[in-house]
Length: 292
Image: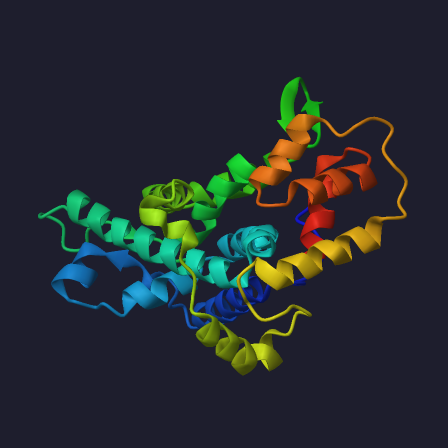
């Protein structure tokens, strides 16, 4: 299984996050200050160091966390391609704000009045990473299964193992942010208060795209909403691109079509992609993502 085309094609928000977190982690880490950005009840509530709420989600505290974290963020770029950069940026902000708020609540609930320091949470974009595991679990199908020494695995297992490594890297210090991120992901998935429909205004999104285009150039269009004329053009381009491909050996399974439709793709496009991919749902998903 892969996350679609290589690189940051049609994923400028993911590219910005990877660059920002990577650069910030390296710069802060060389000064030995990554741990100093951790969240704690004493620093946030008692000392009112609110700037930590903004800086903590941007910096990894160790090299291993940096490598696993950036790998996951890069891998999950498939979701930006699926819903568009505009909505994905809102998802990033929503999951980060909700998870950070839940972390502060957890710190207040777990504080020890007899301790001068109390528990502190490891820094890093844990809220975003683990919020993305929710659509990964529900929306990305398993394409292959295999056994290793009698244990059953799938092509998604390696992503889960990378997440587990991060979740347990610092025990409670990393477990709490990870769980808060999962809660934020479930809130978005359940469409609380119609949150999935929220996006940034078209004018603001276009202005931001023009402003950061030289830095985040990834051969993608400005983050606009999917639908209308653009959607129709994408559909025609898809049909033209794959019209001459050979048909599959059998008709596409209805469950494969339903899975792709649930991911937001048009039914006719899903059927054409499965035909081109010879009913391989992973290849079909990548074809659809490339065409949008």
